[in-house]
Length: 188
Ligand SMILES: [Zn+2]
Ligand SMILES: [Zn+2]
Image (cartoon, rainbow, N blue to C red; front, side, top):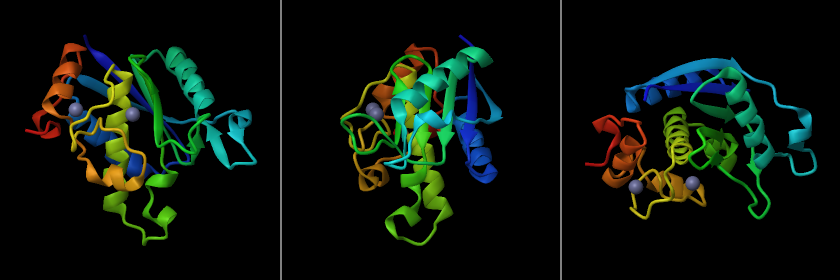
């Protein structure tokens, strides 16, 4: 199965998108990673009182976009914050096995926590969240292996604790789903 992964974004700078595109292409050598460009989200998907995107609706919109653009998978990177009913915030969301994933970058920035800006740290967090949500999009559930990128993270500390790599079991499941993972992205 040849997979075409489309990467779209909203308000995210080109340096992070370019870097992420390269890393994802490295991680998934048989997947064709293609940037489709900046998208606009309908304003009604934004909860003005909370200052957060309604993630369920953003994900639904991303699914429509994926269908329209004809990719096998789509990752949408949104520079902003989001929530879902029952959760004060989410770092990202995906349709399990549905090929569609969204990552929100507001809470990945050190500045959000009052810390000095740190591009390297920010990019590493972005990669972790992208690998995590894409893992879901390709059928992976949460993993209990402590360093695996598929471990559930409820805080930025938990994001920082895991690695931008899959454990062997998660990587094998991805390969069974037709997505090859390069060895540099597997915890050996
Ligand atoms: Zn998750
Ligand atoms: Zn795992």
